[in-house]
Length: 139
Image (cartoon, rainbow, N blue to C red; front, side):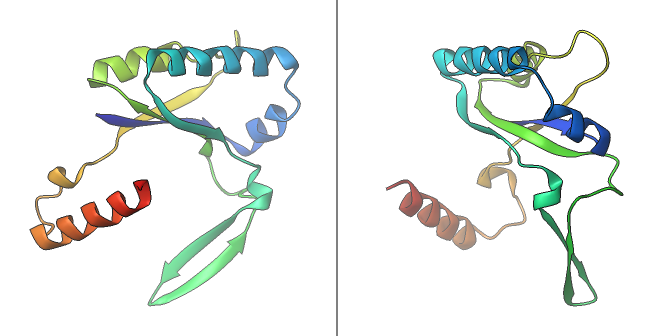
């Protein structure tokens, strides 16, 4: 089972995150090392500020690009990990170990990554095409 664990942020939190002291980075590095040693971390990264991003809005057949920062957003993803675990409970246990500030709030979201087998409405020939595509990326 794969889970996406996302650190959620707000525009105000985003500004403060780049002012964090070295102890924050040390705690996160130690946590990442634990994930690697346990063999559950597939990938993970922090994301650059929303000021460097863009939002693409599809409406009525067209696409509109809105440059960041995302000041209107209540929350957005600030960083993520992809974990390979045996159960939802194991993913929750790893999430609970994530470094967090002693005061204030930090929100993580856990979402199971859907597998092709979960997509009942997807025709089998399209699932096979997707499997082949994924295999070609791995090799």
